[in-house]
Amino acid sequence: MERTADGRRLITRITEVLGLEGDVVVTGDLFMSSAPARVDGGRAGSGVPARAAELRPCGIRPRFAPELELMGVTLPALLLANDGGLGAGGW
Image 1: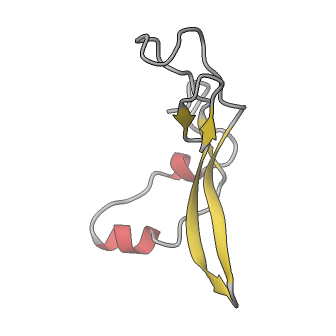
Image 2: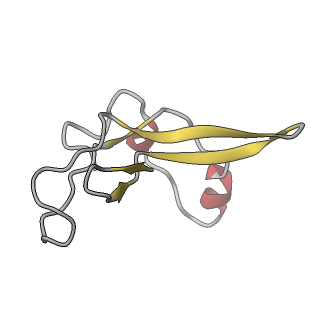
């Protein structure tokens, strides 16, 4: 999460907790922003939304994916592609 110049907070990455190695928490990024977050005009409360950088897949299959599949949820291959497989528009 990053804070913009006007004080808003924007999600810049989605990270999965993978476990512990001793006393160290091991994480892996699933999605990261393609560019720094920025605000396109406006101020907090002005009704002009902050423009966040697009979140792009890192190409890592989440460790919880098999649990989702047991519940009938399949993650699309494009969602896991690290080549910007979501297209130029991202989400």
